[in-house]
Length: 327
Image (cartoon, rainbow, N blue to C red; front, side, top):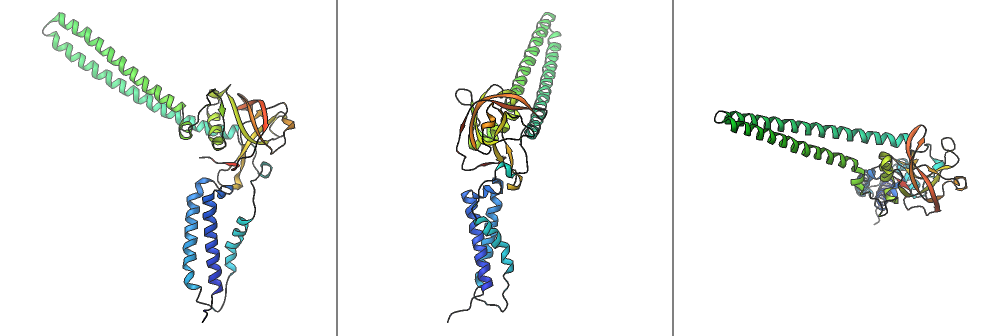
C-alpha cells in the first residue's frame, strides 16, 4: 500500500535541501565572492548547516498528510534560489553608484595607520628614556657609595676611584643610550616595514620595480598610498579595467581599476592609481589593460597621492576574480 505524501512537507524538504547545497557549493567554489566579501564565508557555512538541519527535520512529516496545504512561504526560498541559478557576471564601473576610490579615501586609511605608528614609536621612546634614566641613577648611586668608602682609607685612591667611577658611569650611560636608541631605531624600522608588507609578503622585483599581481592588488594599493614618498620614482606594472571620470579627471588621465567590495556587491567602488597618458582618449572604457610606468606624487581633488607616468599600455585578460576585498 502506497502511503500518501504531504506535498507541503516535501516541498519544504526540497527547498531547504537545495538551498543548503547551493549555499555550500557557492562558498566552497568561491562563487559567493560575486555577492559578498570573504569574511562572510563562516556565516554562509553556518546558514548551509542550519538549512540542512531544517531539511532533515521535515523528513518525518513527508508521510503525514494534512488536510490543507500551505506552500506560499516556500517562495521565500524559491525566489533567491532562482536568482542564484541565473547566469551572472561581474558589475562594471558604470553600474556602480560610487566614484573613484582613491586619494582622500585611501589617504584616510594611511593617516590612521601613521597615527598608530607614531603612537607606538612615542611609547617605545618613552620606555627607552625611562630605562636610560633608571640605569643612570643606579650607576651614579653605586659610584657615590664606592667613592665614599675609598675616601676614608686613601685620598689618592679616592680620586682614582672617583675618576674611574665617573668613567664607568659615563660608559654605562652611553651603552644604555646606544641600546635604547638601537631599540627605538629597530622599532621605527619595523613600523616603516608595516604589517601590510609583513602580512602579505609584498616584495619588489629584482630590478627594484613593483609588479602588482591580481591577488595582491589591494594590499599593494594601500601600501603605496600609505608610503607614497617611499615609492616615488619606482617603476610599476599594474593591471585593471580602464576607468575614467570626466568630472574629476583630466582628458589625459585614467585609472587601471578594480572594483573594491567592502561588504557586498551593493557597495562596489572602483579603486586604483591615476595614470597620466597622452593617448588616454584612445583607451576603451571597461577594457582590461596592463600599464607600466613610474610612480610620482600628484594631486587629486587637492590632496597628494601617488600617480603613474605611463610608459606603455597593452591589452590584458581580465582575472578570474574581478573584485578585490579589504583584509
